[in-house]
Structure formats: C-alpha cells, structure tokens
Amino acid sequence: MGRRQRGKIFNLVIQGLVGCLLVSIFVLNPQPSLGQNFLVPFVSPTGTRIFVAGDIEYASVHLDGFTLFQIASQDFTASEARELSPVERRARRIERGLNNIINRGFDPTTLQVSTATLNNLTVIVAKDNQNLPQQVILTVTEVDALIDSSSVGDLADRWVKIIQTALLQAWQERQPAPRRQQVMTATIIILGLIFLSWVSIWWQKHLRNRFNLLKKQAKRQSDQNLPINSPPRKDRSQEPILASLEDSSNFRQQADIQRQLTLNILWKRLALIGLILLWFGGIAAILYVFPETRLEGRGIIRIPLRIFIIWLLLTSVSNMVNLYVNFRLREWVEEGAVFSENLERRILRAPTLLEVWREIITFIAIFLGIFGFLAWMGLSFAFLLTGAGLVGALLTFAFQDLLKDWINGFLIVFEDQYTVGDMVQFQEFIGLVENMSLRATQLRAADGRLITIAHNQIITAHNLSKDWARVNFTIEVAYQTEPDVAISLMAAIAENMAVDPQWQEDIINPVQVAGVSRVSHTGMEIMLRIVVKRLRQWDIEREYRRRLKIAFEEKGIHIGIPQQSFLIARDREEFKGQF
Image (cartoon, rainbow, N blue to C red):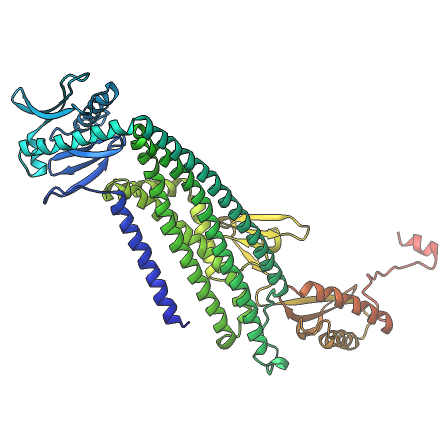
C-alpha cells in the first residue's frame, strides 16, 4: 500500500468519525420545528433543557419518559436565584396533574379528555364516569399557539388527542401482565450485564497480558539494539551500507512493537470505557423498562453517552495521529540510513520524540474534549472562550513552574540536547537518562538511584555520550623515564586494543593526542586521548589501565614518586656552629 493510498484511508476515517459525531448530536438532541424561528438551547440550573425562540422560551412536557408536547412562556426568569423559570414551573405543574390522574386511577373505557372554557381561557380537562371527577390539566395560551403557528382551538384539539392516548398507554403499562413482563425484562438485562461484564474483564486481562509481553519484547529489542553513535573512522569509510540498513531494520521492528503497544492501549481504554458505559446503559435500560422511572433512565444515560462519544472520537483521532507520528518517525529514521551519516542518533531520538508527541497530542485531546462537552451541554461559545481565558490565566499564575518545565522540555527534546540512553550530568547529578517527558528527566545513577529532575531546574546539561566519547587518560611516570619510550609504549597498547576483536568495534581513533602534558618534582605526566563510541569510554579506560600496568612492569617503567632533598652536616660541631 503506497503512501498516497494510506493518506486517503486516513482522511476517510477522519471524515467518518466527524460524521458520526454530527449524527450523534442530532440523535441525542432532537429539536422540534418552529417554523422560521431560530432556537437557542440552554440548560437551566435545575438541569432542564430550555429553548429560546426570539423573546419566547419553551420546554417539553413529559409523561412516563415520553415527550408529549412543548409549552411556551414570555415571562423570562428575572433572577438567577429562582430555582425554576416560569415555563419550567408550568411544565412541572402539568406533569404532576397527569401523574395524579394515573395514581388515583380511572376507568379507561369512560375516560374523556376534552377542551373547556374557564375564565375566558381554553383549558383541557379529563374525567371519567366512576372515580375521576373533572380535573383541569392545563391552559392553552396564545403563546403556545404562536410558536406552533396555529390557532388556540386547533392546538387544544391536537393536545387532547395526545393526552388521551398517553393516559391510556400509561394505564395499560401498569396492569399486572405488563408488570410481569417489565420485571422479566429487567432480570434479563441484569443477567446480560453480568455476562458481558465477565467477558469485558476477561478481555481486559488478555489485553494486559499482551501489553506486558509487548513491553518485554520492546525492552529486549532495545537492549539488543541499543544504538551507539560515533563519527566515521577513516579506516572504516568503505564499510557497506548494509550495516545502516540493518540498524534501520532493527528500528523498524521497534517501531512495529510501539505501534502494537499503541493499539493495545487503545483497546484497553475502549474495554474499560465500554464496561463503564455498559453499566450506565444497563441501569438506564432497567429504569427505562418501568414507566415511573423512564425519564430518569434517559437522564442517567444522556451525559455518560455524550462523554463516551466525545472520548471515543478524540481517542480514535489522537491514536491515529500517534500512529501517523510513529509512521513518520520510522520514515525519518529510514531516510537517515541513506541520506544521513547520523542514523544511530536518529534511532536513539525517535522513541523520545514519539513519547513527547504523545503527551502533546493527549493534552490537546483533553482540552478539546472538555471544551466540546461543555459546548454540547448548551454553554455559549462566548462564555466558553471567556471561561477558558480566565482558567488559562489562573493556571498560568498557579502553575508557572509546570509551564516552564514544559517549555524547557520541549526545547531539550527538539534541540536534541540529550535523549533517553545518554549519559548526562546536571550540576552534582550524573547518570544515564532512563526516562524523559515534557516535565522532567529521570537519571539512573551508578549506585542504582533514580533521580528525577524538573526541567525548569536544569541550567546546564553536560551530555557525556552524544555521538561519540573520548578517554582522556593521564599517568605520571618517574622523572628518569625516557619520554619517547613511554609515549610509544602507551600508543602501542592503544593500537593493539584497536585491533583486538573484543574492543575494535568500540574504538574509533586509538591515539588522537599523545605527549608530555606536565613536568613536576614528582615526575612527568603523559596524556593520551582515545576516541571511542558513546558510553564505552569507562570500559575501555579500565581495560587500558590494566594493560598499561602490565606493560610498565615488563619494561621497568615506574610511576612518578615525590622527591625531596636533605642536607646532612658531616661535623656536628660545625653544624651547631651554624646556629
């Protein structure tokens, strides 16, 4: 599959996810048509969803969880301290009246819902021939008719039919046979929840085992192919490109493992969120089965479902972006096998760059998720921008050090000051970089301590292993030693190590500088520099010292010894006379 085809597939997937989000918005937010009026929804302090059309607000009337019709009001809430707006109070009053009729009981064969006139207003009343006296359900107002684009009489006749049908259906659902069916349905849902939860938990355990296996493979692959950067040696300039291709192949295997880890993490998150949503949905379904709790069931699932949709969309997009970054980094490393002399450094930097990009993408996804959820809940865009600005200002003031950490971490990573696997020194701390994030760097010291250093605390960083390293070896020999003999012997030992199969791959230039660096009363100090591959300077220096000690003993060369001169008087009397 070519790059162009992969790009087309990526674009199609993104478009599909965006389309699913748009469809879900319309599914979860059905809005009745009010002619040409523009509807502005908002959520009241009590959680009721209210729509505004011009200078009129309206809300829905529910019975047993179903929306019957919409009522309107021009009397807006004057104070935010009031719990309910006028349209909310009117809707609740109508719903209480309908529930009272159902709870008191009525004869379905003689139930009559009709219109009447009370105080020159059109009202809807209900009664039967046995237990239910005439009861006013609601008053149909001119505002109701205005938003419906019809007359008061026509609207009242239509609401009469709706209320009559809803009351009969509510009566039917409360009979013994439907009740038994509701209980059986709830029992089946509970058993299904238990079974699906067991399957989900088993699947999560399988994914965790797979994740641990992939982590071990990644660690083993990293240990086997830890790149050791070095400048090219003159005597190795004719090496074939197969070595670079082999390094690139090893990194490709690491990149594939990272891709599998990314997919594994996505599946684990989907399984966990799916389990949570399963129980939310199961509880909502059980509540929805019974007419008395049907509206609460819809309310329980609405917010978790919105959160899940936003999470699913952003997680899918962020993981695809992570996979795309992984793919681009792999291409970047493979290009280094052909066009760059620093392939090993690219291989070393790629995992750190991938981890940092993941943190950046995750942060952006969380911010967009919170912003999108609040917008979906009905908060205005201007309010969200104002709130985001205030929150941003407060966070900037409260987390100044954290922002400094992120900025410094970003510069450290993208300027390639050091990366995971480098030996670095910060002030008095020295160790191998074991982990990096945008916030901090973790060093593993020689004694095993794990040192965590925040990036805003790093003033000067000494990278002891970037690209290549050098052994600065000095030794002091006796003053009587012939300097040329000692220098030649030291250089010969370094040259012999450079051709030794055990060390030849680690030594780039066995003798860079050799000579007398200092002469003192204790002897001559001879300096030798050996250019080696990164992180190999300590092993090579220890081996060089061992060989040099043996060679000095064979040649009779002694190390420098402090020398002092003493004057001893031959005649004690003469000695005393001097004082």
